[in-house]
Image 1: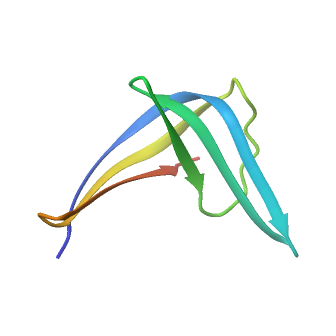
Image 2: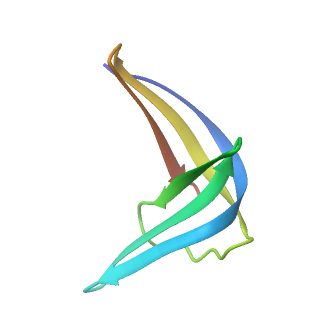
Length: 77
């Protein structure tokens, strides 16, 4: 069973990436996380934040085993 820890964070949107195809939407936001730009995904593709807006996201660490550790950033609102 993977071990997961998470926190919630807020950050200002620096860039917005979006596209749609036959009614299917993709939206992601670039934010600063401690001096590093990260991409926060909106899995439902329903948000409409703009550059300068503040978003809240889930900052998740997933450890499957010693060699498989990942980070995931998901929009909350």
